[in-house]
Length: 366
Image (cartoon, rainbow, N blue to C red):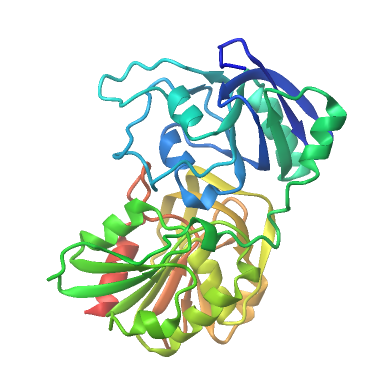
């Protein structure tokens, strides 16, 4: 069946709730963990962020697709990473003259199954109450029993390791080879804009696959280590925990973002947990407890560090806290040149309130 703007589609949630709408992207059946993003712009950046691997995204802003896509400039990786997309009104045509093409063609070519015409306000309210759950979108199957059977085959995000699937499979370089400092990046699902923020501060980067040994990374003799964002459950990533433990023991500066933050927390004995909804959007207020200043941040995570454990820790201290729900947003390892944040200081799109964190990392290497 070929796509038309009137092709029907169905969304089935794990708790049995069903929404009917219209197809977008590829005609087919696919699912994952459903979650919502509150950003008003930047849908292409969302869809190409490796941290969203295995997730179906609800865009809470009403109109999606109206400015098209730009293949390179607005992509955070080399492909679309999401498992599906849900929106209210979908524009299969676009008005931006500089766009490379329509979002419809972009998603269809990437094999992404989606649904529009959904009351996303009602859907998000339902998920906020019930919590994130798996879902299935189909524009070819409409029998409820058949849909449920397919949905039951989708694995839970809790206990799922995804970083080794979305990271680079071969190490590569970025930046100027004669730059003043060298930074080794452990790629757990890194965003391009994070790498560019480090490189433009006078660093030469070597980006390593997630399961690269510490010995191989250290042989490059970097001045500091960066642990990236990425998808999945940090508690099952023993390989990354082992590598970052050795980063820490090297006594060189270590900086982690998002999943990298959660892995650093695991290294110092703190546990993580799966959140009821998670944080995804461009408007999350965070307080820097060191400076006393607040920041409006970009976020994308479904797991968090245990606050009570961090407060009681003799190895790390809390540096940033979320002002909406008092969850951990940053920590610093005592006696070491190592720190991490849960939010995304590269903030593309979004404000630049948190970009000083990259400068702090550079300062630690000087």
